[in-house]
Image (cartoon, rainbow, N blue to C red; front, side, top):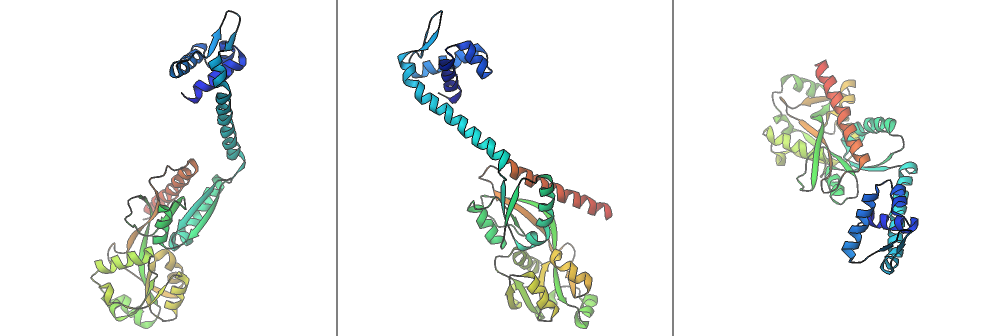
Length: 309
C-alpha cells in the first residue's frame, strides 16, 4: 500500500467516477484502475461497487475511507508546509570554523554567497580545529572549516585553499641578519616560542613542519600558548618571542615592516585549508550550493595566481 493508491482511492470515492478521478489527478484511467486493483489485492477486499450508472463504496471501502482521507490530507499538509517554508523562511547555514578560515577566508565566501542567494543567512562559530570536527561529529553544525585534518571516520574533508605557515619574528637587527645567513630553522631552538593553543590546526601543522625539518618539538622553549592571533603578533612585535602562524594572518604586518617572516625551506609550511562535513548526512540543496560556491571561488583564485606566476 502506498500514498498514490490511497490518493486514487479517495479521489474515486469523492468523484464517484474513475474517469473524473483520473482527470483530477492528471492520470490515465487505466493508471487509476491499476492503483485501486493493487490496493484491493493487498487488502483482499472489494473497495467499490460498480454499476452502469455509478461507482460507490463497498462496506469495506467505507471502512477504509476515513483513514485514507486523513493520510491524503496529511500528505497535502506536509507538502504545503514545506512549500511555504521555501517561499517565506530563510535557510540558516550553521558553520564552525577555526580562526584562520573564519577571519581571512570566510568573509569573502559569505559576501559572494549572499550576493547570489540573499534569502539565506549564516550562523558562524569560531573555535579551534579540534572543536570544529567535534561539532561536525555531533551534528550541531552543517559544515566546518579547518586548518588541519583530524582522522575521524565520519568526516569528509575537501581541500579548497593552500595556506603557508611562516615563522614570525621582531623586525630588529638580530633577525634581519638571520634572514641573510640562516640556512635552516635550527636557530628556533635558541628562541622563546609563542605557540597557538592546544587543538589549533595551525599548532598541529606547525609541529608537523618542525619535525620534518629535524627540530624536536619537545626541545623548544615554549613560553606561552595563545588563542588569539592578534595577541600573538603584538607579542612578537614587542620582542616577547617568535611564533609560527598562517601567512594569511601575518602578511599585513610583514608587508608593513612591523615584523619579519621566515618561510620554511622548499615547499615546507604548505598546508590545506579544508571544508569538512559529516559524510553520514545527506547535504541539503542549499548546503550543496554553498560547497560548490566555495570550490568555485578558490578555483578562480588559483587560476588567477597561476596566470600571474
